[in-house]
Image 1 (cartoon, rainbow, N blue to C red):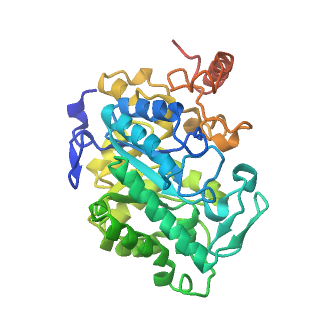
Image 2 (tube, rainbow, N blue to C red; image 1 turned 60 degrees about the vertical axis):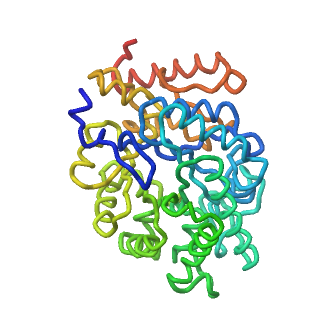
Amino acid sequence: MKKNKLKFLFKSKKIGKVFFKNKIISSPISINMAKDGLVTKNIIDFFSNLAKSGVGMVTVGATAISKQGNDTLKGMMSGKKIYFDGLKLLSNSIKKNGSVSSIQLYHVGSQGNPIHSNHETVGPSEYHFKKIGVRSRALKIEEIIRIEKEFSDAIIQCYKSNFDFIELHLAHGYLLHEFLSGYFNKRTDNYGITFKNRFKIIKNILEQVYQLEPRLKGRIGFRLSANDYVKTGFNLQTVKQLVKNLDKFNPAYYVITAGLYETAKNKYQDMKLGKYWEYAKEIKKITKTNIIAQGGLTNLYLAEDLIKNNCADFVGFAQSLIADPNLIKKTIRGEEEKIIPCIAHLKVGSCHRCRYLKQKDNTFSCITPTSWKPSADIVSKKNIKKDLLIWEKINKEVYGKYKK
């Protein structure tokens, strides 16, 4: 397979003045290896490795705007002076290794868990997350105003630390999504009741940011939920309404996703059926903003078709690149049979080692032989050897015996 046979995927593109060598995005990934919110060597190594893979842009996932907003004690953070140097080292390393850099910011909101974060769970309204037995408290007006400033500070810091784009997480039931969604937001003040009021927190954040740093116009992307799979939650109609409001703020791109923590089963069913890509195509019809389709992509052929058929402007890969960071290079060389696929994509529930909250020690790793591995101070050689044994066992069951 040569690049010219993937002409849509490998055609260069610009968002504003930022040049993309191709339309392949490494979707937001968080590896839960920060120390007191600070960037560590493992974080730099992991995202630098993704940049070397040949993608057009690497997105650093789930960086919290405060301790209260973090989902674990090992999550990255932004906004305060102490985080700046590490963020700049990270963004520069990604760019040095050939990729555009983006960072995703969020506040975990009502879907947080004090067991992992050591913090009280808060949201726009009281909410009982029955699956884990956590009840969140409704935020007071003065707390919302503080959170708006924390988002503004974090966005500006990430821009000044040399990230090309900043992505705001408005999906998956995190705080900003909760304010937008009638399912979570039961407020009766001017942050609730109507869609205009529920959008207020986003509007206030963006207006603050653009007033303080006008150069950020065209540099902020948004992750959007096209379906929450619950009554009064987001669906195609409500996300289109959101897009029309966000388009007034000159966004860089929209990443289309779906689902909450509590509707994960529906989410993965839709992902397997390609519904995420259908959602992306529908939203692309109503906006001139760049659309990133993602969710369950495993090969470049399908990604090429999505671009060719006008479903999206860019395509996002996550678990496939974790399992084999050489996926792109092997495809270009015509060595598709050597690509090591993600076990979880083919047999849901059989692995998910990269989902750190599912691990007893909250570590991030992948059992495939080609994947990036944490440094020895995090994972011992003995554990890596154990991973390989797990891989061989599952691989034999799912694909047949692994050939080195």
